[in-house]
Image (cartoon, rainbow, N blue to C red; front, top):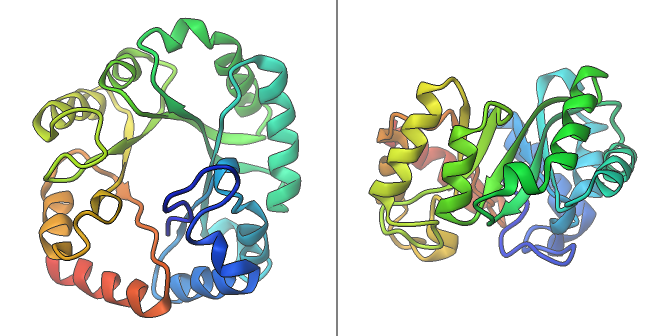
Length: 233
């Protein structure tokens, strides 16, 4: 369950529903089998996910969030703040958010070290990144530090790092090296809203995705997507 459609400046289409609105959507998703809550500081969705976690067993859901920090001190402060905002002692997955630099694995080494230390202490369970350029994605594929990658992928190349074939080739390399891959922009940030079945079949047909995130904005949309996914699978 994504919470960051058009997500930036601590706001998204999902957080615009308010705490109660997004809470109901997260719990409805849980009741229909969704066990993966995708959040981020930049979406402003931590309080909404925190409220949902009060109603479900913590060990039954995977919580992912993302930090924009590019230095060690900020990353360390983010981890403390994120856990308070999410109301949880640990975060299942923490990503470095929206990387675009081809040399990010050296430029932002301090943040990587903070996340590695946090994993050793049990503050997070998995670390990785989301990439917004093909150069950053290729660097992620080569980095042994990256355990999980959040990648933009859909059949028409909408809001992607490169054309679908080029991106999928890199993702195959990631999977071959043992990394997990989560897909995003499955519906092209709405560009395939009238071609949902095509987009879902494409995502499900790929041999590179462990999961994918889509941000529904209503219960009816959410349940329709779940139904379509079941049929496509």
